[in-house]
Length: 161
Image 1 (tube, rainbow, N blue to C red):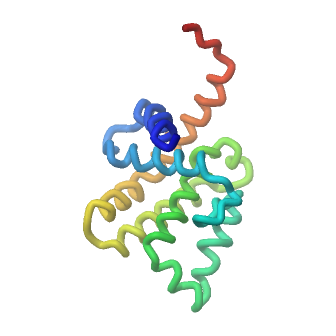
Image 2 (image 1 turned 135 degrees about the horizontal axis):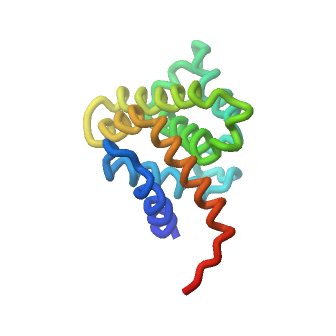
């Protein structure tokens, strides 16, 4: 269920987090991974997950370059979704993306999405949390990548009870 998925990802992230990150950040990043682990790309009840980094650019960056699209990129919820999708793709799938993309550039874009969402919210716990995730985005991307690598490697280990 959703709680089990959250605790699964939280447990892995908690072990690999660098000093300076808060428990709230760790839970938030785990919730992003848990959400997308349980959401189909064809789900119509929420904004669908981009299949790759080019789709994130098409869905969230390029529309903001037009006069009509700029207003949509002011919405903190849309900016948060964009940051979440960027974190999943550039973090959890970092090893797969490394050969095709400049990941540091995408880290900056993801950080910018969370930072702008925080700016739009201005005050409160959520704004502070998004600001922290923005500041630590590269660390979170690497943490998600390390977790992904660990999960891929652990599938070959025999678990004895």
